[in-house]
Image (cartoon, rainbow, N blue to C red; front, side, top):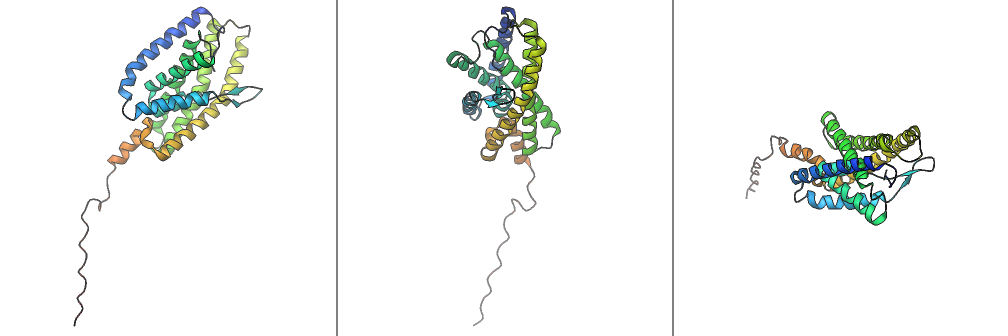
Length: 243
């Protein structure tokens, strides 16, 4: 998914850079409402995890490989605005230090993986969370579907950008087939990793998952049983032995 230098013309590259800058500016304002004593450390840990996992590729098909994007996972863990910032930092470090994605294409990559993937993944998660049964299973299902959808949608957005300003000597149809087909399979891996990671965190520290705080509030507000809070009945006096 990392777009290298020279795949898009200067106008399209500049346009995605402007979109990315505007998105990051909005995320800086929105993250103020999300960051607290729990979310701030979790954001750093999540960014480090996504950075490490993105460096590992898994085989897909036809000699191609894929890797986790992490947009939906990050959004569910720390919130969508903070997720945009986490993804931006990850993509910047990868481009500057590891040459993973072109320097002139940073705006394109932030747009695709930091804005589109996060927005689609978290949007689908919120919609499905509203209709699926409340609870851990419904939350994981919503996150898995959101993660799956985020990958092919981001890939198709790149196809659209390539149609607007692609300079590589490849037909748009070939790009669409390659990106769409392969990233459907990559989306399955994205969903599996997202569900596995969220399930592990929910099992040990559900309070760290921002997308699960509604479950914690529901548990806290659940009515207690009729006997809860009542003082224990006094014990019956021990029988006195007759002498």
